[in-house]
Image 1 (spheres, rainbow, N blue to C red):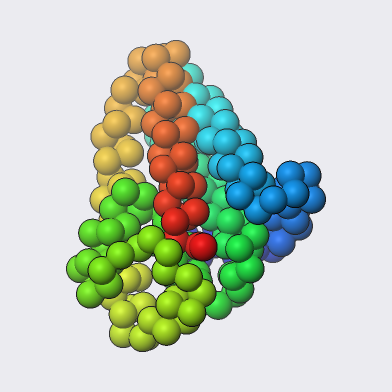
Image 2: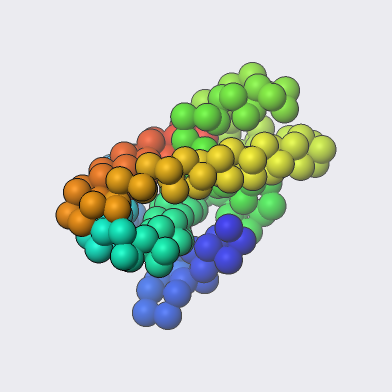
Length: 193
């Protein structure tokens, strides 16, 4: 997770930094909301494509395909959420913001994670609220997010058993990755206002 986060900021060889990535969308689409919506749409496409391609090989490629799919889609999702935070003027090098980027990866489980650590709502937290979250709560969020993501990756492995069937596995993987990326993108829009 930390590797993917760092690479989403600094960029992989041949890719833009997170700041340049966000700026490209802002300059293309003008308004922040339109840029974010276009970003989410394109990242859904990337994730779905990666899921489809890693699922094409069937049973023989599963030992390599599942870790490759998890790694590539996680990078795309973290980069998308970080870019949304940047577009909304958050400092993604701040540890509290990083925690909320990871929190967005839990998708529909955000409210449950926050309730478990004593925060009532994830919507419209805003910069000031994120800055005021005590370090003990940040640690609790990180712990809960880690647990949720481990659970999510475990479920992804079970769902990916459908990838044992060539071609059908590509459809299942692509659909799951595209849908989860869309949910994460919409969650990030709610967190970073």
